[in-house]
Image (cartoon, rainbow, N blue to C red; front, side):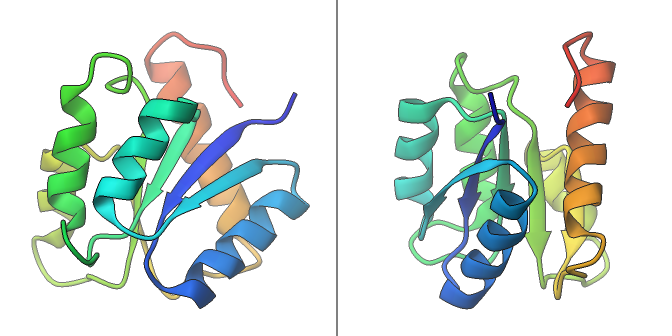
Length: 132
């Protein structure tokens, strides 16, 4: 059984690239184009991980991460921010909002899946759960 990941990303090209790389490596992927849609998808599908852009329409990634963590059935799902926000303090701010990991865009297609696997493995190991 493959791991299900939710990608909350409003840029079609970024969503396509991440989905392609992850599915090619055996993950199942669902996508959402904005925060409210992403929260609904997370509640419906209970993914094993969430990849979250920070700069989203309607609701930014900081708010989405905080909202996801408010739901008891979602609070143990690791959130990995994948974003072009790379200013001083952005990493700390998204981690404080509830994200477990942080990756800068543009992603490196050669190492992206391995980085995601490592985040998921380290998160699950740290929470005494079965790793990826």
